[in-house]
Structure formats: structure tokens, C-alpha cells
Amino acid sequence: MFEFKFLADQTIEFTDPGYLTSSYYEVNGDALIIETIYTLPSGSKRKFTGNYLYSEIDGNFTGTNSFISYDEDENDTNWTCEGTASVFR
Image (cartoon, rainbow, N blue to C red; front, side, top):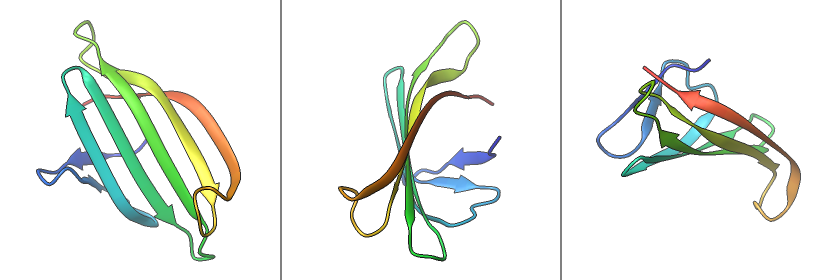
């Protein structure tokens, strides 16, 4: 579990940012998009993209996310991983 807050400049502040080098979020109606990029000491990058929908039933955003590992260019992918997640208070 990650603790974070959304900032007014559409970036995300994490309690423990680790190797975070950039972040972005967008809310459009009931949809939430989150994108973060982490740069490891080796120079390898990890891009996380999450697409979520708000539920009035439980007050959470639930959806899918993907991780992409790459070195120099996102088109030169080392591996990918997909899953599901929720964003809640």
C-alpha cells in the first residue's frame, strides 16, 4: 500500500517517494488517471499507469494499472505487468 496525496499542480506527493522522478494525475468526471515514473540507480525506468473509475457505493476509485520497465526509451521495453487496484481515503 502506498500513501500519497494529490497536489494542486496535478502531481502526486508520496509519503515514501522512493525513486520517483515524475508524477501526474487527471480527474475527468468519474475517471482518474495516474502516471508515475521511477528511475532506478541503474538508470532503468519503471512507468506506472493507472486508469480508475469512481464508485459512489464505496467512495473508492477502482480499475486497472500497468507497469512498464525500460532503459532509454519506452519503445525498448524490458518487461510489462498488469493488474487491478483501488485508490481510497
